[in-house]
Image 1 (tube, rainbow, N blue to C red):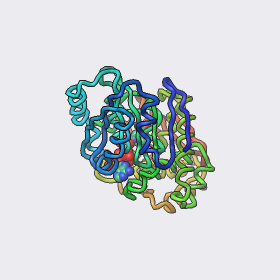
Image 2 (image 1 turned 90 degrees about the horizontal axis):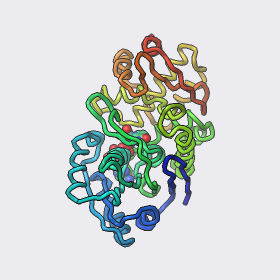
Image 3 (image 1 turned 90 degrees about the vertical axis):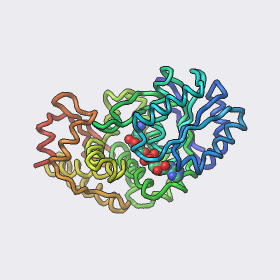
Image 4 (image 1 turned 60 degrees about the vertical axis):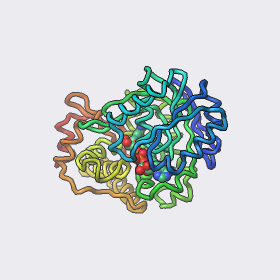
Length: 349
Ligand SMILES: NC(=O)c1ccc[n+]([C@@H]2O[C@H](COP(=O)([O-])OP(=O)(O)OC[C@H]3O[C@@H](n4cnc5c(N)ncnc54)[C@H](O)[C@@H]3O)[C@@H](O)[C@H]2O)c1
């Protein structure tokens, strides 16, 4: 088992390895005070892992209840959130009790936001079961729900007490969602580690899965420790996201899923930056080859004008400026502040 300690406003461990779910009760018992906890999960994940996690927690002396909602991004909404608040109230949850977020990024973001806000904050543990959640969303304390105007527009920073990433759970993750995690893994390589990128561009991700997850989490640790509240360095994690979020929104969250939209976002921006002489063509080519080898999309049939219109509602916009993340080299990201007019030119000309 690998253990990475994140030093943030609240320090916590990220455990990564095989067979960890069976011992979740033991790990939870080490960091939680009260022996009352609520599992929040989606129906796909709970059907497969709910019983195992519940039993392990009960064996460790926990009193356990569960709140299970329909899987998918559409559930990361204020409707589900309000149902969850009502359920927590009906269960008489106190500030001493906790939430266990068992699932992918949707579960983690929603359950984390409930933990950040219910009773002004209760403890929670992330138990990520998708590749995307294991390498990215479960670490760093960003929690959120989506609203009509855009993804993740309502949220809070709330670090978990612990993250338990059992890589065995990825064996049941459908391939299309595995690809979403892969999109984010490519991002980590592009922004911070050429060594990681090299592992992925060979197209042998499954052979090096644990190593790749550990490397991604360690990059996230480093970035979060430097800038927990997203005022500077942490913005580099948004490489590909401004356009990725725009694509998800244009397609009404029914088209490309998050990591694939991020893949197209990284490529669209890198291609535009190369065209404008901001990035070397070789970086553009290498990124495209890496996406192709890993069977990730690199183009979406959407007009640049529509991409621009939908990208500027992103959280990275400040008045007439927007922060764009550009990788001039593989493994090195830069935050570039642009006027909206320049950004429009970059995308559309
Ligand atoms: N908080 C952050 O820092 C952060 C970072 C990146 C992404 N996100 C968010 O993460 C979300 C995407 O996460 P995701 O890709 O995990 O999506 P998801 O949570 O919807 O999971 C994808 C699908 O896989 C299923 N699933 C998950 N684990 C499974 C398993 N082990 N076996 C079988 N099925 C399984 C889910 O039920 C779902 O149908 C987006 O909402 C995105 O905004 C958050």
